[in-house]
Image 1: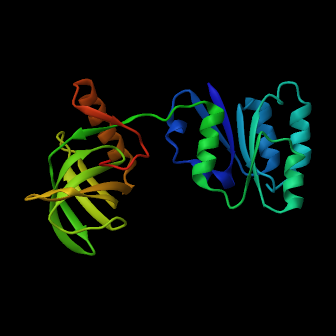
Image 2 (image 1 turned 135 degrees about the vertical axis):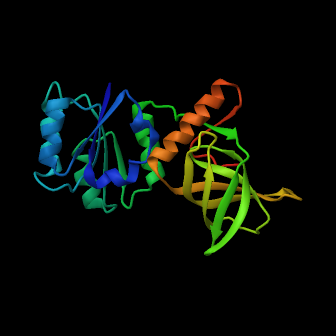
Image 3 (image 1 turned 60 degrees about the horizontal axis):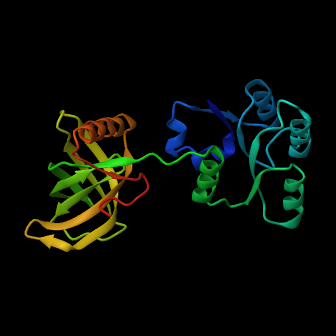
Length: 240
């Protein structure tokens, strides 16, 4: 079991990462440096993700205690701070494994977390599903059909002309009767495959209920086992 201790102020940047859903990773959060130290003493985290200017006792003191503790010092630390020389020097005094300057690029932070946890991104699966979709674009209804779906998004065929960046809402049903209500962003228009049935568009969900997403994942796993799924990766653009 790997344990990750995250400053609450940093949680928003990385909470969407799917590796935190794994059964072999446990996540703790702290709102102050003193709480961070208390949790680390109790749990012995493998990775700490924090800010240098966390409330409470100053970070230099907290991490000096951690470095001197025989059971505490074997921890990887990702720390963020302002980019000026003074804050960078104070950050270095804490002895982190990696320093990221603010504002932090979320994808860079996630990649660093993944690297330190040595976690390979989970594979998602696109599965063939031809279902009628009740869509809405700029408050105007339209109909289209799904070509395939995954927990990240869908490939749809529509006569409506859309462009990357357009936001649509959609409603359709899985074979088991689960209704999927989602909002999505057009991330790709497949012009070369436009035909009598309309244009193909790759859609990434921007809003979808977690229980519905889980139902799609379960459906995709079932189809995978039957050999009807095509492997892809969670952050890849749907339809690519």
